Amino acid sequence: MAPRLASNPYQSQAFKAIGLMVLSTICMAMLDTTAKYLTDIEKLPVAQVVWMRFVGHVVFSAVVLWPFALSPSLRSQKPWIQIIRSCLMILTTVLNFIALKYLQLDENIAIFFLMPLLVAGLSGPLLGEWVGWHRALAIAAGFVGVLIVMHPGLGEVHWAMLLTLGATLGFSLFNIATRYLAAYDSPSVTQTYTPLVGLLVTLPWGLMHWQAPDSWLAWLLLASLGFWGGLGHWIIILAHRLAPAGVLAPYVYLGLIWMSVSGYLIFGHVPTMWTLAGAVVVILAGLYLLARERIADGRRRTSKKVAGSEFDPTQ
Image (cartoon, rainbow, N blue to C red; front, side):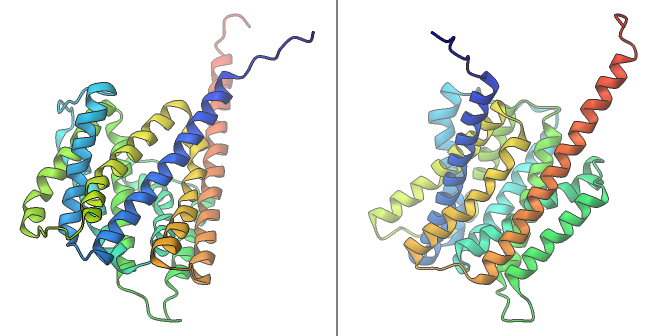
């Protein structure tokens, strides 16, 4: 009998990571769909929905993550940066949930796909990670794609799209802060600050605008917000432990499919040609940016190997 080929452990891990990443995009789509249903159909205040999103996240962490997956800790080397990062998540959530009340899900996510490009552009002045002209062109193309989605001058630009742009900028800064903190704090510290600061900061606002839901479905959906958000973020962490970001990044764009499907099934929304065309431009720009980063990373690794070989005493 022919010998059985051993499976590649790295390939197996990569497949698991990709599966987790796909599952995380479904969780995020469920979060946004639920938030839109509660604010648009159930007419619940955005403040209440935002607060319950963080309340549920804390409950999910206390029940699932802290006992089994990570030990909660507030001992940060950069506590103020942790608080600022958490406030950026609050700002992103508020702007996103308000925008979702008025926009179609596919419109919202198409603009949000600008985030990786913004992270690349802002990493220069904030982290000293400047991009070359190839990636600068990709960032510019991404903005063109967002303009196609918004199509100013060819129709009415809904003001809520500006809120989505603000949420995208906030989430980009949130990701940059996450990368900065990775050199100082463990993931358990960062994952403890985010829901707790969110709950405490939004507590007065949420209680002030509290409105008792009229149906058991609304109660259930309110309770599920933190589950989708907490589970989605934790799955992303697990995926990045198994595979590098460059392998996982393209699968984020599957969110457009889930958003379009849920938007059609629940709200009867059909993506417009403007949204689809703009999303294609933004996605292609993001994939090109990813390809350039892979090339740059490969060159850095090659240069390190060459530099190391010059001092190899065995040669």
